[in-house]
Every structure is written in structure tokens, then in C-alpha cells.
Image 1: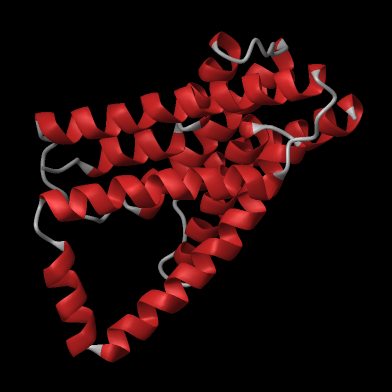
Image 2: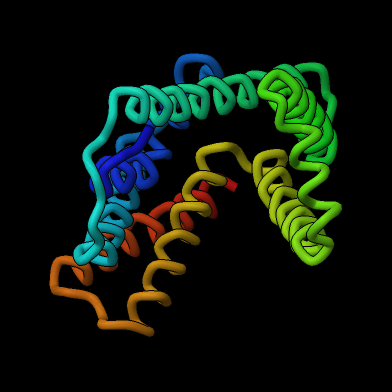
Length: 216
């Protein structure tokens, strides 16, 4: 199971696309031409920077199972974003506020149940527990990772509850762009088309911030 670098980069950079489609089809959300253009600029710019960052990386070819998994992931992103938008609209009609920690709790509860079932089905639960007990330092790092993940999710669900999934996706794409830029600038730097991607993404991000202020 695997993906080539180019396919993985395109999939990660284009997350806003299924999120917008899901919000449109399932959440009855509408987008202006400007918003679509801004999203396209963010996706294109982030993709160019990511390609530039990994231009010297070696990767194998994509497998059919790898393609299936990444497409399924993007499809689920669209479904979740659409249902979240529908939930917000229903709560708005009932004059009920969507609370971020409610979304966070129920999402993580179902994720935990699904992960537990898969771990038991694959006979990995006992082996993983035994390994952590034998390596307490690793168990500590897992706990720290879980704590950081919880703090990050609190920010994500706050954004979804108070804005929407599309804004959250734009923010995560921006975060990815910044993290790639920092790692690149600490190394060999960016080629010309990488800086073109920075400019294009920055235009899209600036437009998204401006349009959001106008809507609010």
C-alpha cells in the first residue's frame, strides 16, 4: 500500500475541494465566484510549494489500494463537512447554538470505538498494550502526543462551530503552507515555481480573510 509523492501532495493540497463540494451538496451552502477562486488559489499555491519542497524526495509508484484509501479519505472529508453544515443550519433554525466541545466529544467517541474494534479484530490491542508497558518512555511520548492532538482539535472544532468546515480547511492548508516554508527556508530554499506558489496561495488566503470580514 503506497502513494507516489505527487499523488500524496495533490491529495493533501486539494482537501478544500471535497469539503466545498460536501458543503454544497449536503449542507446547501452556496459559494460565490470569488470564494471558488480563492479556494483554487490556496489549493494551487499550496500544491506548488509542496512539490517544490519535495522535489528531491524519492518515492515509489502509487498502488491501487493506496489510491482507493486516499480517495476514500477525501470522500469522507466531503461527507463530514456537508453533514456538519447541515447540522449547523438545523440548529440555527431551532435557535440552538452548535458547541465545539459537543462536536469534539462525539467525533472522538466514534473514532475511539472504531479504532478499538479494528485493534481487537486485528489482534493488535494486547500486543500494543504489552509493548507500551515494556517501553514506558514511549508511552509517555504517546500521552504527550495525545495531549497536543487534543489541544489542536479544540482549535479545529472551535473554528468549525463558529465559522464552517471550509474556513477550517483553508486554515489547515495555510498551516501546511507555513510549515513547509519554514522547513524549506531552513534547508536549501525554494525554487522559482515554489515562490510562485507562495504568492498564489497568499492571494487566496488574503481574499478569504477579506471576504470573511465582509460577510461578518
